[in-house]
Image (cartoon, rainbow, N blue to C red; front, side):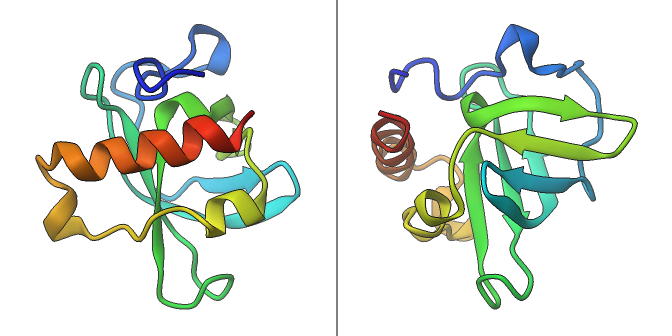
Length: 117
């Protein structure tokens, strides 16, 4: 996966424009990581922000939309194609810094693009 396509929803992931994912549970390939706190549908810059709760106490993680494998609207679960360890090792997400910061976005793209290899 390249840095260019990591920020878009895959056609077969089950994403529908306007679908509110806030509150959906997020499943990594090896278990639950938390619930969606925020999501973006911006073209070329779509992502999820996940509140990890007790898993990584007090931390929110950012997942580019390209990491989503499948959205199950009936069960309200988003399945991502990364392990818990890959997600835990992601750069620190800071809401104040992330908004409009291309360097932060590139840092996430590098991490998640390499994590899938």
